[in-house]
Length: 359
Image (cartoon, rainbow, N blue to C red; front, side, top):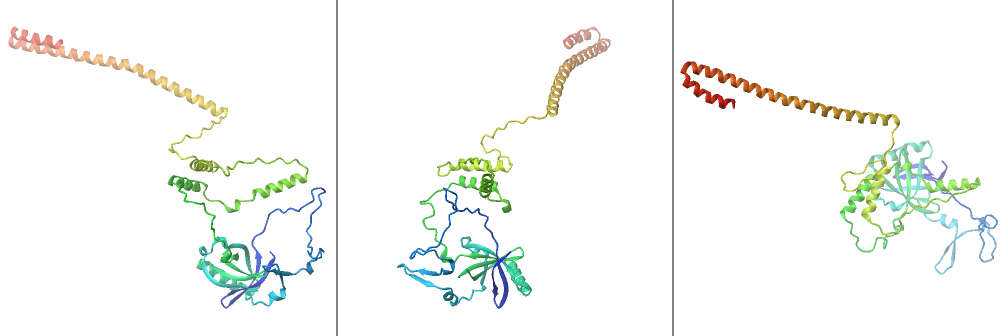
């Protein structure tokens, strides 16, 4: 990568020669202005407003416009004479926790590369010190004619520097928040939490610019003479007053469907009904045979039950008959014994019980 600035990091009395390299690149698609009548390109020419003549780059200088419109010329020599300690130095002024840097201050990002073999040791020392301290370095440096504020941190095995806006360049957010007191219910917060949990995390490397890809496809189609179909515009519901609870619930369900997750059970809502997919012929046949086998088993069980019921009834009758016969034999035997021992009067007395027993 081509360096855009050469200098040194001032780390106390330690000086680390470095090269400054852009850490980001712009992939935006740029367009030219053309004349619609004939397709000719429109170009801008720098013209002096006094003599209305075109001026070349070497004839152009810089000036500061005063409040009354007066132009005050400023030359490069004037600027070079100003005391600027950070003209070729990234001067570290403090080490602070990363959360003390307001993300609103973040600007361009750069990689700092060790410039030469002697710079490798102090460069590595600063990198490892930043790693172990879990802090970032706040520094001042000069680039493109002005002094800037920067933050140094470690990315993999490289020291990166983020340009920072000066604190007085951050505007206060006055008049930006919604007017009046807006009450948010716990149920709405719970649904918002559920939506956040459902969406979960994302692999940042998987994100890409869909619009830029669509523009590239449009350009390729027009270049090949193909007919470009207008894209379908999705209704985002912008500017509409919506039911916040319903919108959150639908968002949670949509997020779960997109991630292949089932909806929560027992939430008191009707489940989505989906058509049953048709199975192959083999699986259908096996399903039919399984159902027929189940019906046959049920019928066989019923028949077996109905046959066993009369048998059990007959067994009950046989048991009661056996008991009666045994009782009669016992009574006759007892009567004979009483007759032999006590005579006819005893027989008459036992005759009466025998009748009651047989009854």
